[in-house]
Structures are given as C-alpha cells and as structure tokens.
Image 1 (tube, rainbow, N blue to C red):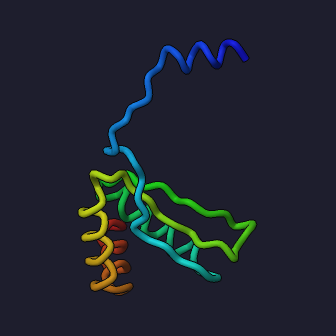
Image 2 (cartoon, rainbow, N blue to C red):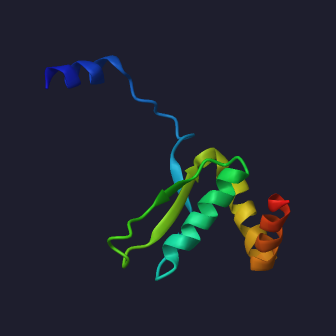
Length: 99
C-alpha cells in the first residue's frame, strides 16, 4: 500500500481537459453494440481516437462512443456525414477497399 502512495505523491495529475472523453454517439437496443462498433471503427479509420463504452452482458444499458475533447467537432462532423450518406455509401466504400 505504501508503494501506491509513493507513486501518487511523485506523479502530479494532469489538470488539462484536452484528454477528457466526451460522448459523440449513443445507442440502445438490440443493435446498439453493432452500431457503436461501426461508429468507433469509422472514427478510428479517419484518425480520430475513439473508445467504446458498454457491455453485452447488460443490453438494457446504452453503448456509447467517446472521443477526446479536442476531437469532438471533427468526430461529430464525420458521424453526420456518414449518417447523411447512408448504408449505401458504406457498402460502396467497402467495395472500393476490396479491389
């Protein structure tokens, strides 16, 4: 226990909010996990670090995708563009990577 106290005393906390995670996507229901995973993958593919929050063992709770505060605007823009383009655009993009 003393070892943990020593580490905490030596390592000051970073008070900045640049790395705070904010929710950019939330889904509830039977397909929530799949939708959240798709959003996380899309953001990661576009260079936006994203974290998936949720558990399959408690499907009544929502799944969330969170990104660092400094990426929030770009993440929201990417999600809005993907939603506007619809599933057909996603299938087309997938086919383009297969060739």
